[in-house]
Amino acid sequence: MLGAEETILHLRRAKQGDASSKEILLENNSLLIKSVIRRYKNKGVDYDDLYQLGCIGFLKAIEGFDEKFGVVFSTYAVPMIVGEVKRFMRDDGAIKVSRAIKSQAQTINRFIEERRNTLGEAPTVEEIAEALNMSKEDVVLALDSSKMPLSLSEPVDDDGGEKKSELIDKIPSGKSEDDVVDKILLESMIERLPPRERKIIIMRYYRDNTQSEIAKALGVSQVQVSRIESKIINALKSQM
Image (cartoon, rainbow, N blue to C red; front, side, top):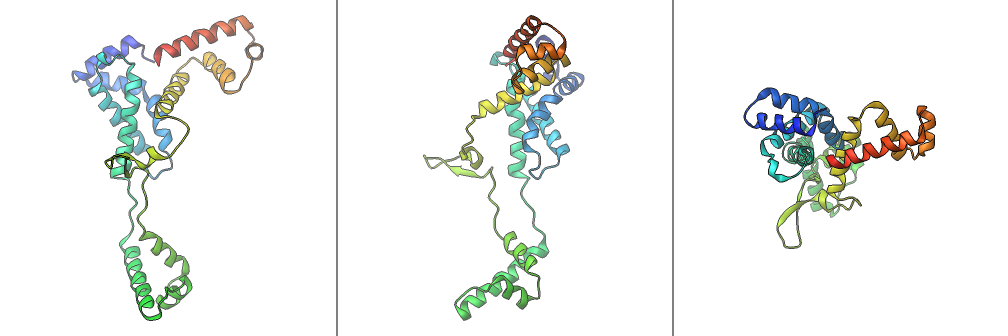
């Protein structure tokens, strides 16, 4: 794990084109990248592709970071990684429908339109399947494929009438984007702690164990647990 001074040193070198410094920064921040892309698993993009996108966003963060920002580099990098993944899912992650299914959908829609014009009502799925010699499942699949899926990254109108936000931003979650970013950063920092310190934090704040219970489990005194806990919390706060 790189310290703050080492990180700044490699950032300076990387911005000057030093490939080895970029590699070092990537290797030492792989847990951070993985923590970010974890939110987008099982959403139609392979994990390896997500990781590559995260790395691209991270490299862009290296290029765009300025020490004058007055923030820790990881705090600047997370939104850049998130942005790269969301941009890909918006622009390149659309659902693709085969030509055969599209052709079936067109045939079905023409049949439905003809029935409406002649009988004044739309046919049932069973009637469509029988008339076109298709299974009911294939009829439903073809009809659903002709419906445009609504993307969570779809631009939506704000109150002023300008399309600035995405649909996902309009869904209430109870947590702000800053809260999510802070959680990702915190999880990444905890994963980098030495085993004993990481165990103390997990037992204390994720499992609600008391300091006495932790001390007994680790075979140390409660005073030692208290001191270690305070040291960890102060260290984490300084990195946020």
